[in-house]
Image (cartoon, rainbow, N blue to C red; front, side, top):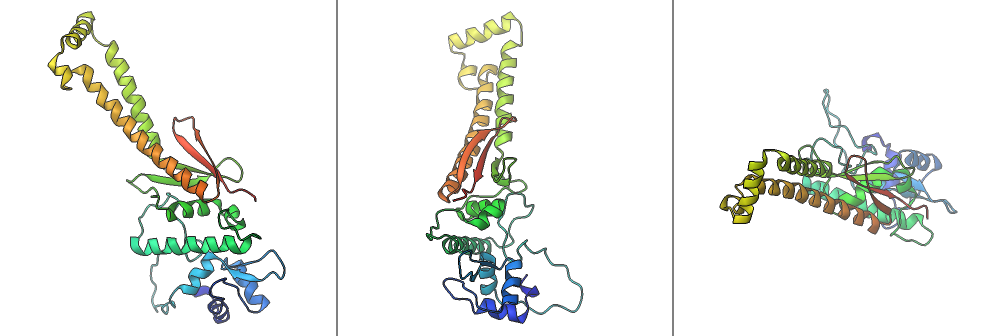
Length: 277
């Protein structure tokens, strides 16, 4: 996006007020910056324009190097050209985790400033109109800024998607469904083991428990072996459930309306929506 800006647009962005991000320039330049997502027009008179989080990032970005003469392959830019929150759908980790952390902090501070400037009471604790229009990106930014880990290939973490419910997103923790399946499989294995074998084997098992069979006590017997399998599934589910609860707490603290539900697959999902007021 920065390379698409004209010299006049760059001058207007560079001259924005340091604290508020208020812009001064011709109507044509300001309208173009609004269309590019780098500025927004305040709903109250005199309808001044202010930098969005993307515009603030563009203002602070170093000048772009000149284009090379030959063809090159470059990574695809983010949707707004400057920053894109990680939703958990990405296939590659950030190239520079430290730089990514700085970008996230800057984007979150920019969003808080956007909240302050677009609310009549200046409240930064509730979502603004931009967040209601970009729910997935806004929820993912809140989670990433709070230190929650997005999912990645081979790694668990949160995943943010549009919800079937209107004006809401759903947050899942990757791995919760797998842990629930492991727990159900272990329970089925225990029930199956209890029904296999003739009366002599079951009697021997009962006698062993009553007599304190050392194989059963130290976990090498068939009866005790099923127990730890179920425990492993429960621990995995508890960890995923705890992370889902932490994600819900982050969004609630950021002003979202949050509720947790079970789904038909036995997993858990958080439904979050930004309130209208």
